[in-house]
Image (cartoon, rainbow, N blue to C red; front, side):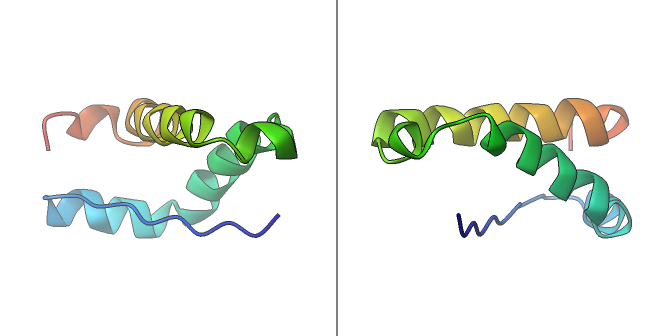
Amino acid sequence: LLLTIALETRSPEVTEELKARDAEARDLVLSKVGIRTTEQLATMEVREALKQELADAVTASLFAKHKNK
């Protein structure tokens, strides 16, 4: 599986924290994507739901203190 992900923020502080915690963010993404089958990832419905799940997980795990940014 080849995966590319981009994260957007409106806050320079959050951007810097994301850079500093890159390995943690990658591990989080890999754990969420890794439980899906190839067949699941081939469907748009699963991919769209996965986008939201990843956004929620990154926000909760990495940026809880910057939640409103």
